[in-house]
Image 1 (spheres, rainbow, N blue to C red):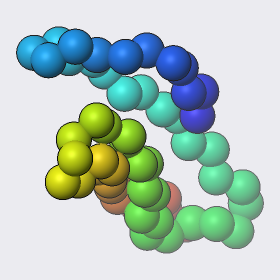
Image 2: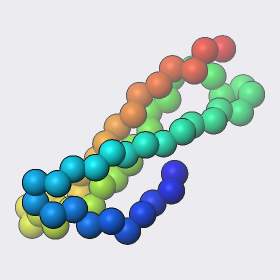
Image 3: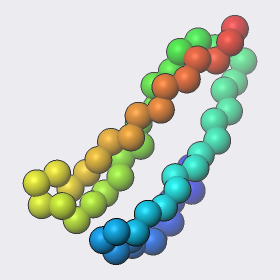
Image 4: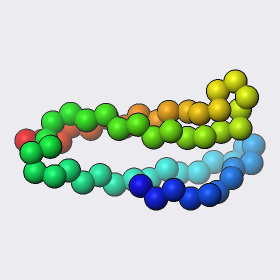
Length: 56
């Protein structure tokens, strides 16, 4: 994953894109977690979960 340094202002949006490559023998279900940092005082980090199932 490539991480940039963009800062969004209130009301703005962006797209998070990533690619996954699995090595031989790593088939089956996987759960990936991406942590997004925010400036919110109560919950400054938001977790984005990506579930996938790589065929065997």
